Amino acid sequence: MNEELIKKMLLALSLQTGGNYEQMFRLLQRKEFPPMEDILNAEKHIKSRYLTFFDKEYPDSLRESARPPLVIYYYGDISLLYKEKEAVAVIGSREASEEGISVTEEFVRELVPDYLIVSGLAKGIDATAHRAALDNDGKTIAVLGSGIDYCYPSENYSLYRKIKEKGLVISEYPNATVPDQDNFPMRNRIIAGLAKGILITEAKKRSGTLITVNWAQMISKEVMCVPYRARDNSGCNQLIKDGAYLVEDSEDVRLVMDGTRKLKKTLMPY
Image 1 (tube, rainbow, N blue to C red):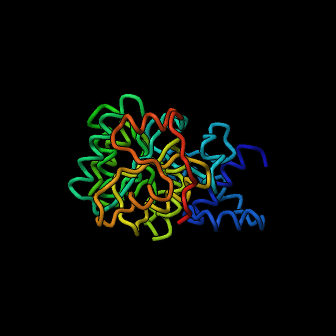
Image 2: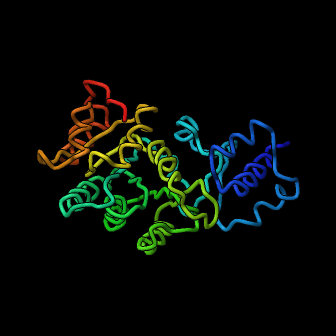
């Protein structure tokens, strides 16, 4: 196959499997490709734009990450994919407290003049981070755990539309693929891959946020956490104990991102 045909083949394979990485990888290993008719017509079945792993435009930050997505669907400013050194992933609890929301808004507001904000469009901290970036004339990338044309949760639909217009929305899942519970842990590896540093502004000890930390550790990304009061069931405090940076303001984040501060110990795996 020539390069153009390989690109269309991966697209057809993604459509066939609903973007499931494991299924796609197994089919490629077994050389079980879609019928040629499906390959040639694949682009007719999507509304969004897309990149494949074999495109020269595919971002190095994902190419070098753990389990790089084979196809990326997107809407918006694709140039944002190439700003890893300027990107901070801001993530945290879906059931965010007033303090968590306030802290997230403050950090993002002070970071967006110089940094791109990456998050997952979930309710709580993720949505707050995206919204604060846009409200302060910053740039943001939303990484979906659903199909590129399926906004989940639906309550974030207006935010989803704004990010499509003023930032970048990406997903490895095609069209209106309904999210499966396994999609979100996989989505988190993309969030970790796109950012130089991961900032957790609020999380419980048992939290999906820790999955993103695991992915970040695999590819040597910086992990930063805002501390909370004792006995708050804080996942942030636990991560700090295990070696994450304690950050109290945006200046601390800048020091970590600039490489001025170094971790004294390695984060424990979760």
